[in-house]
Length: 101
Image 1 (tube, rainbow, N blue to C red):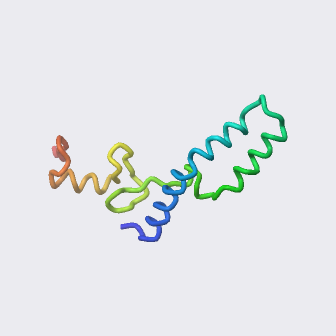
Image 2 (image 1 turned 90 degrees about the horizontal axis):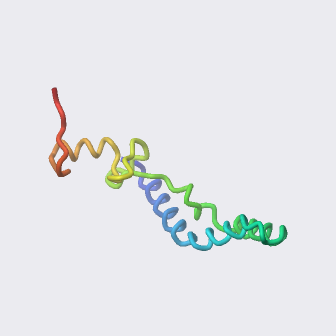
Image 3 (image 1 turned 30 degrees about the vertical axis):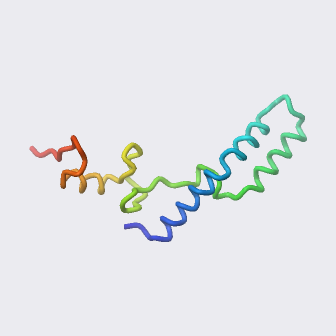
């Protein structure tokens, strides 16, 4: 189980990223727009740097929904490999069977 503080920090990052998503996208579009003057694009860059760092989507870490484990994460299931194996062994995931030979 991951530290509770790490899990909560990641939840705050997800919330901030969602909150500033539209504003960040608009500023990035201005930044890339070649039809605008260089000063306007630079102003957009400065405004982008004023936004909170944790509002960036790249700062969010994929973590297991059950354990908070950051590694061995399956995006489709939102679970780590360890939690996936435990749930599959108990039979809680439909259609998944633990193989043995």
